[in-house]
Length: 113
Length: 110
Image 1 (cartoon, each protein chain N blue to C red):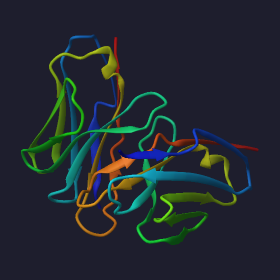
Image 2: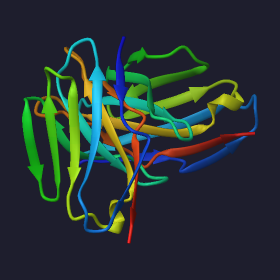
Image 3: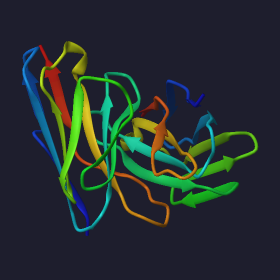
């Protein structure tokens, strides 16, 4: 069966510090991978989307970046965090064919102080 | 533009039936999804509609009318554990990306 992991679960970082969040998927190959952010009381905002290694689509302008160094690894980064980067970050994957629903990881709660 | 609307909050009583509506305006349509999200947790997949009509899965059913840009999620025999946010999401054409609504927070009272 497929599983998706994210770490860390929670993170408190000062403004201006760097960020690296990691997501890995097991039990599937060549998944589509997604990074979302959910601010308090708001919906899911798609940040990045990847259909393969090294292929990243950015959905919104921001100070975040994403990379996919391996087929089942997706990394979200920032060189300098802003207060507005606080939120709940969710990684998701989907396969090809069928309903192609997205499956979400457990999320990382980031607080920037 | 693309827009998905859901009520912000709803309340219901244990054992009752509740209907959560979702209307959408998107450039192309290739499926509508409902997700459940408990506070502080990740969303979990509930249902998928791509053709008009009702899809039933246990206590949960989802309906779609493509001509009206409308869907609803029906929850029967409500339980306390059904207290959660319910997210409506639409997939456009030639893409696997989803556009999410802001979610409906449902509170079930005894």
